[in-house]
Image (cartoon, rainbow, N blue to C red; front, side, top):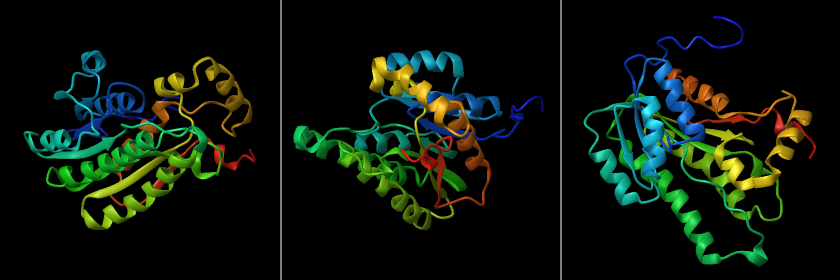
Length: 249
């Protein structure tokens, strides 16, 4: 090992990982990490063109372009996998921010329901495909744990996912089920949400976080692979936010 870069040699040799949301950000970085560790990847993404570009780099076993919130399509995808897999990670889905006065209740209800259905659908339809002691891994967040205006829906999902994860770990055993709760991660999704405010947010975090840098998708991918490899981990939520929750504001 050189510097502070972990030795990735053969850490997932011979294993197959399904990455849902693999076109960019955390999903793409996880696919890179799996391949660097000797593993095989099945890539799922909503946008066919972005998925094709990502696949050209990763060289996966296969790709499939569809919206993971479509649970019928999700069921079909898992039923058509040619064989068992070792791990499934779902990074799909984004936050919903709106103050109550501006909230579109139909859209909000749809977002909340789709996110829960996607999580439960991934668990339900993958259970016959993931090997014993393999991993089902979801990505959630930490930012909405503190009450704030405009965070009602995201706060509810933030609270729900750890409870869902713990219950699924019992129901799906010996498949392991875990949740990564990320703070701000410097991804294309973050860039699209913040727009012109992105660089100011980066500078704020560099100055205030205990780690003195911004958390990147490679950090989350490293944690994801560790959870896949460690067969003693299940039913838990793992925070990765650079110490953001330790701050007073």
